[in-house]
Structure formats: structure tokens, C-alpha cells
Image 1 (cartoon, one colour):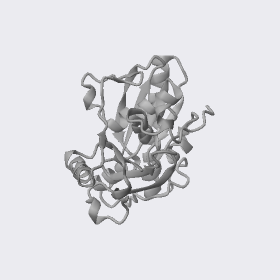
Image 2 (image 1 turned 60 degrees about the horizontal axis):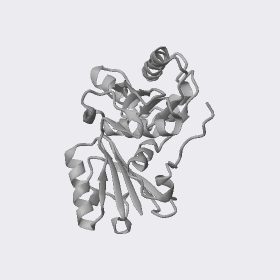
Image 3 (image 1 turned 90 degrees about the horizontal axis):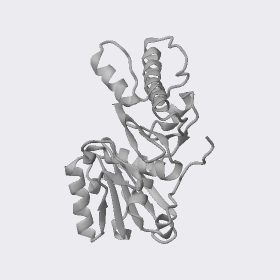
Image 4 (image 1 turned 90 degrees about the vertical axis):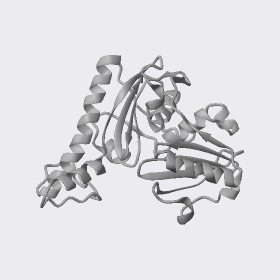
Length: 262
């Protein structure tokens, strides 16, 4: 089996694939702050033949993964941001400082769609743009929907804010303070993405495909004026591209690519 890890600031997501058939076997997640041994929702490392890791959770978390890999004698591949890979040129002056989840996501999106507008709707909302020639224009980072709610909750008094609001009717004016906050934060997320997309159009003179990933991708997609595609496993696909193991991966066939209907 192949174990892919997407270690985020909040959650560590994992999935297992068959090393020969390329089939998805299982998936799960744990809180990044938790130790692997203390969780019931972890894979059986005795079945793992190779591990691939995207890590933005810090050195301590990665050290725990490295320790497990040594314990079970599993080859470990840790992704790093570089100046160039798979036809994409990193816009950062210090390429290694581009978040690896962003780098893997835009690599997978460019490989599958060419020029693209990539948005990760997770704890933070990150936006990246890649031109047709593979040039990365750079991007934006802003608080995610839940983080904006939690920040506002900490910074205000006597305002009822529910970070777990289901966002029903979020495009309407709020008729209570709680609704006004929830809907306002949603509009803020949509607004920054829409403005960034207009800027990308002005610079590239192309209507780029919008590729969304992250926990709030579907929620954001429902409110955007432009068409978009949701690709939950986009970071995993970047790991497939960087460290191909199966025959399908070696041929560049990434798992879960959404239909090109835009």
C-alpha cells in the first residue's frame, strides 16, 4: 500500500492507495496536534510499502512521521517546494518558502488543466495563479471562513458567533447579528477570490479555470459567480506527480481529476 499524508495546521489527512492497481483503499484524518499512537483513526503501518508527505504542520509533526517510518522500515518521500518542477516556475524569490501544499496543488492543477486559478479553502484561503507557459504569478493568503469567525468571536463581546454554522442562506442579508456575521464572512471570502480572479484575468487576458480544494471548497463554489471545479485530493495528486509509484502515476494519470466542464 501507498500512504499519502497531507499534514495541515489543523488536520492531518491521510489516504491509502494500492501500489499496483492504483485503487483508493481507505482514507481518514486526525488532529495534527495529536500523536498517531493515541488515535483510533490511523492506518495500519504494517501494510505500508511507501509514504509520501506534504507537511505544513511543522518540524515536530514531521519528526513524528519520520520516527514511524523508521520504526516500520517504510521508505519516506517528503515533498519540498523548488524553483521549478513539472513545467511550473515558482514565483517566490526564495522558492522553498512557498507552502508545500500550495506548490503541490498548483503543480497538479497545471498538469491537468494548463493555465489555472487555484484556491485552497481551508484554515487559510490561499490563491495561486499559473500562466499557460507555466509561470507562477504568485498568490494571496487570507484567513479561512472558520478562522475569520473564530477571530471575530475573540475580538468582540456579546456577539453570538457559531464557527460551525451550516451557512444556509448565506447570500441573503442577515436578519440577526449572528446571521449578519456569518453571511458577511462568507461574502468576504467570495469577494477576495472574485477580485483576485479579475486581477488574474487582467494580467493573463484569459478566463482561467478555477480549481478549488480544501474543506470549504464546495461551500465557496456555490457562491462564486464564475464556474469552478472542486478537487478534494489535489494536494495528494501533487504527491503522485512528484513521487510516482504506480504505473498510472508514472504515466501522469492523477487520481480524482475533476471533469473539464469549464
